[in-house]
Length: 294
Image (cartoon, rainbow, N blue to C red):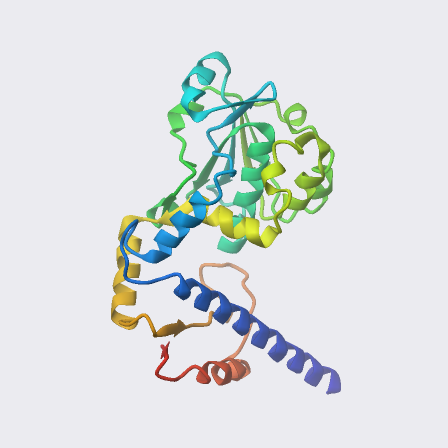
């Protein structure tokens, strides 16, 4: 019985921590939002645009490293005529698991870093369980690739979901020697950031990321890679216009995973309605005129 009580107390502490972190990030997101519509309708995007412009040292995915020389985007057309372009693509299209959206974000960033290390064009193809381009589109980095570009090219697919052994190999691997194919389709949910930074072969290519924490890199890469699709941005704007009519009002939210999601086969129970009372107790503190409590 004592052991069960201890496990219950531990679960409540974990839930409390998750709620606090969720609220922190949601408050942070709202602090970036207002009614200015300079870029895509909100100052969230205006802030992102300013943020991106302040990080011009981030390489564009269309800058290729040819014989240790950096080729500008303006000269890329010439490069593609004289040097066959190679690709590395985050790939999630069939029944094989890709993880949830959080896992996929880690995988996308990992593969972008590999693209920079290898001097390849970076792309994203996700159609499972839906076509995510209905919701997100490229922001500063164009990760869309016309299938016609890939037709007839030699390709290889790697499925590395939950593969921790592969990570350690990245500290010394010669990726071009390992993967000479023109197109590398790769599925992963693991963080390759730390291992690739330690690889002396790619010190120069990844110098721009070497001084960052993974948390900072993650936030910056999400801003560089993605923005809402037009119809989703419109829904987002309308939601805030209705629910957050004044800039001094803040939205407080929490995401609670209950488990047994019909769209996730084998998803175990995570919480019960009785176990999440601690979340409501925490949110009640924000039920004031300064906060919108939905």
